[in-house]
Image (cartoon, rainbow, N blue to C red; front, side, top):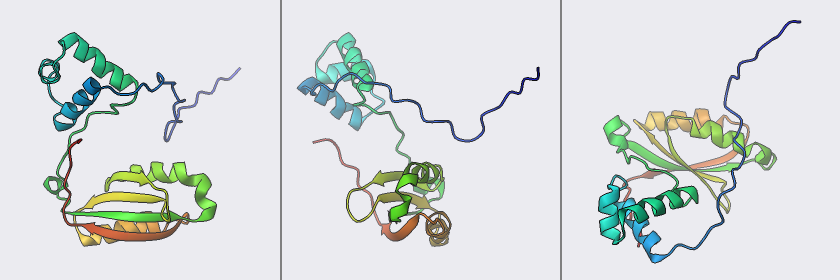
Length: 172
């Protein structure tokens, strides 16, 4: 008997949806924790507990529960694209062909894997996606739009808007 083993090549299959605890409303303490983390995600548990006015053990348990409930989706470094030589940012509106609706997951997966892409937003309205990109030059932007979007048979329309400045806001 011959045994053939297969090695998985390519993207991994999507993980099954893991049920999360039912969403409970956020209380004032949860909101205070989230506001402090949004301002500084690297704050120590001790400093966070002091800022919010709760015990360190309570703070740790609440942050853990907020992560488990999917309220806190992750912690990220906000890196200025200019420091990486990507001086030009743009938002690109993308509309897919009606027949491409079944390929949306693959489209987003491919797009998200591109080094120029910072964010992909799924929209309601005339356009399907808004794609935030950072590139080194207008030539790189033109190449990205032409090669990654306009040559894709699923894409019906694109509209590119340059970003002059991005101002990040805090939770109110």
